[in-house]
Image 1 (tube, rainbow, N blue to C red):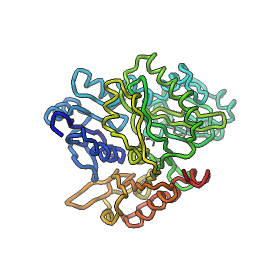
Image 2: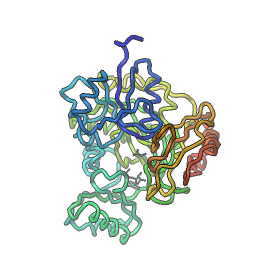
Image 3: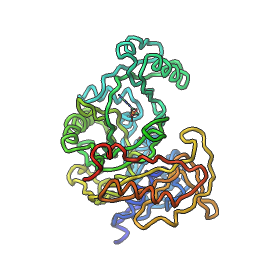
Image 4: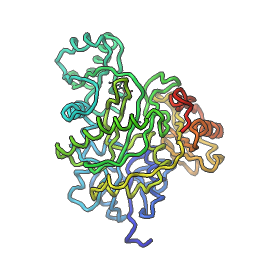
Length: 426
Ligand code: AMP
Ligand code: GLY
């Protein structure tokens, strides 16, 4: 492979998602050098460049001959990193600021869904002085209240009574101000599913569907986290469910993106609830999910870099992605106390004992004088693959038994919904 046919890449972010992206990108014959900004204790090619400083980022890309930037988290996209490189020949994988509002403004996203007939829960948007009492009473408090802006998963309140809903509204006002905009929607019931694909705004190439575990504790109890584990493919996504998702959610969304003239060359993530009435869209994310990425990429046989590049020449939908026939499970190891207060700087040991074939994607870790230390709430993703989902999950726990750090915590019931369904056999 000559220098002409490979390209150097910058991946922005520092989580397990970015580690998984780099791991998969490195398998591509087209990938040259890959830098991670800023990366973590497990990612190779870390660079201490502030991706929020567009001029510094562009200087760095010129210096290292980087022609593709892949953005992990939502904040740089919401801040317009794609718009900032409009003038340049450096390609940035992601939607522009306007299109990123599909994630950064929940009200914008719901209005878009309604306008283009995307299946979703009924809702109403409110701002500061408006009185939502009528809505709350009518739904008997069975509502979900969502602050309009980005809130790292903390702006959503799932309520079961009017007093609970009122307390959520007080919380929103305290945190985001008296004039905070928010929406109230009907509470839905069912299993959740994440469907993620790369899109050029006209067509989409989807990865296998996955399911993550947002609640901190077993049995899906406790506060919401960034994600305590995931598995893929989720047996809940039967062929008929996927067809319904295509027809009632994905196709109307692409139609809307076209009609609105949105500039979308990136990842689109559909957070879906499978209700008795059919699939309903809860949210869009405009980036790869975390920890979903850690389970969808190990099952991907296709070249991720080719998939990413296809969005720039408008051929995203031309070649369907190929997958292995294994299940992939991810159990996240966290710092005890997360998502509340937790301590950092604990020594991590045992990673050298992991069996061949086990993947370990780092999240909140850093290296100091050759020692690996905890540096965040979500610390490591232990990922195993097997044709039998139950074995994939069991292998994760067997591997976890080899790892230690002070106050290590994790959920012991990853993929429980799949086992409750049908034993997790393909
Ligand atoms: P969101 O950020 O909009 O996906 O909401 C975060 C989480 O809140 C989702 O993953 C669901 O668990 C829950 N949620 C959101 N909307 C609803 C809804 N309409 N009904 C029930 N649960 C919901
Ligand atoms: N796992 C949910 C998210 O990435 O938003």
